[in-house]
Amino acid sequence: MEQTFIMIKPDGVQRGLVGEIISRFEKKGFYLKGLKMVSVERSFAEKHYADLSAKPFFAGLVEYIISGPVVAMVWAGKNIVVTGRKIIGATNPADSAPGTIRGDLAIEIGRNVIHGSDSIESASKEIALWFPEGVAEWQSNLHPWIYE
Ligand code: RTP
Image (cartoon, rainbow, N blue to C red; front, side, top):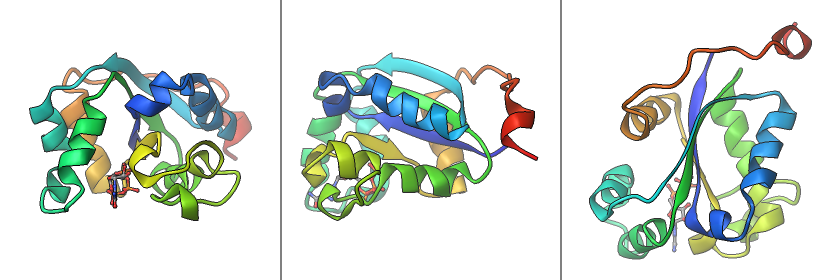
């Protein structure tokens, strides 16, 4: 089953949106395989966003991610990488459709409450980075009611 890495950013945690965000993924039928709250070091945040290191917003992005605890998760389900990005909405909340997490819950690109892996390859890299200990092997017993 496909997996993705989802992170609730510090603004999402501080604003009390953890339950709301988890609920959206659960209600869709995806299942939670790993979950932890962590405060990351600067070097770790820089590693996670290494692909963006040349961008002008990189320093501000790193400050944002280390500004408070984040909730790191692994979610599983059919096409979860692409579908998860749809649930999350466009990077800039100003362009995110209503009904998406960012469309409903955020205003600015630099405070867009959530991260989701953008490909299967980055999902596996990010899961390995954030969950070096691995995640529990289990499958929801709702499986036959969600998948034919
Ligand atoms: P994410 O990685 O957080 O899921 O976001 P994304 O793929 O939708 O967007 P990406 O281009 O990878 O950017 C990562 C995060 O950097 C911040 N950002 N700020 N100020 C800016 O112009 C700007 N552009 C991007 C956002 O927090 C974005 O989610």
